[in-house]
Length: 114
Length: 114
Image (cartoon, rainbow over all chains, first blue to last red; front, top):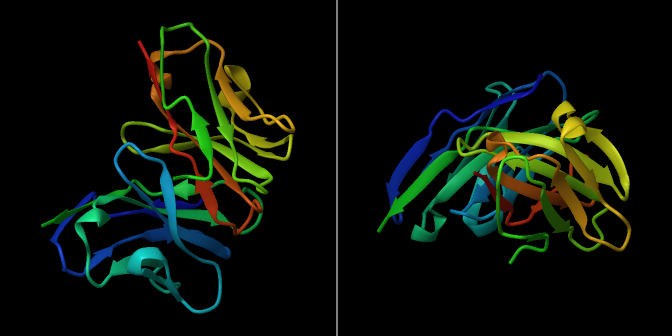
């Protein structure tokens, strides 16, 4: 059974700071990992994904994430955040075979202070 | 603006009433998913379709929930007899492929059962 863990429920930073949002997963086979952002009262917006190849993946709006098989992690990073980045961020995993469902983490609320 | 259109944005029903929501997937996306997101940001997969055929669904969906994706019409999710515990944000997502594919989410239908 796949699981996704986001250890930080809330992260608060100032505008211009760098940020790392943590995601750890457990799954034995090859997997597909992704990050989504959800602004208040809205649906989810795709940020980036990893399936194979370069473990560092670039996403929209300056976000990037690094896959680590040894650490079972897929942390999201941004070098300089903007107030508009304030939202809830979800890490998700789906099996590369079998179920097509996404398994979501519990989310991290990112608050960017002006 | 999302390319997946969900209507209505808000839905208020009494217990025992039917609740129906609709989703127009992104053009060219044959795979459609329905998820339920509760107030604790927990996601529950409900059902998915490829074109008009059901691929997977959970037991809850089989009993009180019904869904369809007819050709040339919006997809729909209907709760036959709403319960208070059904109050949640219902998210529709579509993708080009079921596996290893980016999902486009709609803005959701927020259901309140009173």
